[in-house]
Every structure is written in structure tokens, then in C-alpha cells.
Image (cartoon, rainbow, N blue to C red; front, side, top):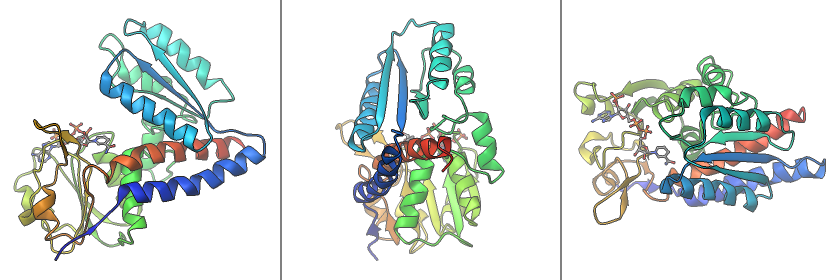
Length: 284
Ligand code: NDP
């Protein structure tokens, strides 16, 4: 068997076009959805992510503000900036690019963002909403992974979904989203004994560990849908996932490549969350 490759770039384009229609409808009513991204310091990877977020907004005709603060910005000054943007009616989505410098308390920052504008979905109120089945903003990477499954025609209800990784930004919200869609969900971590026993039983396998190529073909059920969230830079400069694509694609039914799988969906869902936030603020 050779798996169907889930083309994240093509699906991201399709999803962006759908959300552009909704953004245009808002604009016709005089509301331009707006996203503000705050970055503190000079982390090169973070700068690239922020630039890509701003670019995606421009592509869809959204208003965006990129606020670059120096690395020595005080916590109080950052919180004041967040409060200002929380109150700004042009802004419907607000995020602070993580990680923040060590002298700033990351939890305080996440808690300061208005839950109504928290398009990353990291505020405890939105985490709680997802956990109780009243989703407001789903974190973008797991949300994008879910949309990849849906757009690829993978049925979720009643299936055994195994999520490898339990981070707050990927693994845990992924598991909750799959549960919300009526999968039977298992979460595996670095402490799981006999990981392959679980992965081999997965109809849907989502891997987010940051361990290059750790899931090999022999750990995958024939015909499974495999979503590889991992992005690892190898010594030769190439990117690879947490799944060994070459052996996995011979067993899986569907698989995401790295790059070109989950990656393009993350920013797409950020834009989607921003448009949705603007719709909500307009009472739509
Ligand atoms: P974290 O380091 O926060 O979490 C990794 C998780 O994997 C932990 O829960 C850890 O378990 C688990 N884990 C580590 N080793 C093993 C193992 N051998 N067996 C089972 N579980 C294991 O990572 P993130 O969730 O932030 O990111 C995961 C990957 O996804 C990274 O490669 C990252 O670059 C990528 N990523 C990609 C994004 C995208 O846009 N495509 C966005 C965000 C992340 P434990 O809790 O026990 O330590």
C-alpha cells in the first residue's frame, strides 16, 4: 500500500479562500478583521513566524499590526500594551509570540490577553471551553490538523485516535478536538510503556513529540491516517517530521509530509480564528 499524501499547502489555500469569502462579507459591512502580533526580542525563528502571520493577513485583506518590542521590555510595559490592544476595536485577534524573554512571566502574559481576542486559544478560559465542549478558539496547529483530516475525507467518529505528545499547544488540545468529534482517544507521552502497542492500534495517529522520525512504518496500522506535526531541522539543513515518512507511507492510508503538511495549516487557522472573532464581535 502507498499512502495518499495529504497536501497541506493545497488544503491551506482552499481553506484560506473559504475564509476570505467570510472576511470579504465582513468588510462589505464596514468591518475589517484585525490581528495584532506582539514580539518581544530578536529570536530569529520567532521573527520569521511573525512575518508569515502578517503576510497571511495581508493576503486575505485583513488589517494587521506587528508590534516589535525590545528584548529588555519590562513585564509591566508588555502587559500595558496588551491592555491597550484588548481595548482597541480595530483588533479582533491578539497574540504574543512565544517564547517571551526569561524576565517575563509567560503565564501572566497569556492570562492578560482578552479571552475574546485570544486567537491562539491559550487563555485558560478558552482551554476550559475546549475541554468542556464549548470551543471558542482552538489552538491553531491542532485545529489545522483536524481540518486536514476532515478535508481528506478521513472519518473520525468511532475511530481510535492516538495522539503522541501532551503539550498544551499541540497534544492536549488535539486530543480534546478528536474527542469532541467522537473519536476514542488515547494520549501517549515519553512515559508510555510500549508505545508501539498503542500506535499500532491507531486508526488516526497524530505525532507531536519533536523527536525526528521516531514513528516508523512497523509502528503504524495498515490504512491509518497519520498526521505528523513535528518540524525538525536536520544536520544537513533539511526539515523532517517525527514520523519516518519513507517507511510510514508504505503502511498508512493517508499521511502528511514534512514540510508541506501541517505547517501551512497553522497560520491558516490563525487567520480563520481572527475572522471568526470579528464575526462574533459583529454579532454574526
Ligand atoms: P513539546 O516538547 O512541548 O512536547 C513534546 C511532547 O512529546 C511531550 O508531551 C513529550 O512527553 C512527548 N514525547 C517526547 N518524546 C517522546 C517519546 N519518545 N515517546 C512519546 N512521547 C514523547 O513539543 P510541542 O508539542 O511544542 O511540539 C512537538 C513538535 O511539533 C515539534 O517538532 C515542534 O517543532 C512541532 N510543532 C509544529 C508546529 C507546526 O506549525 N507544524 C507548531 C507547533 C509545534 P512528556 O510530556 O512526557 O515529556
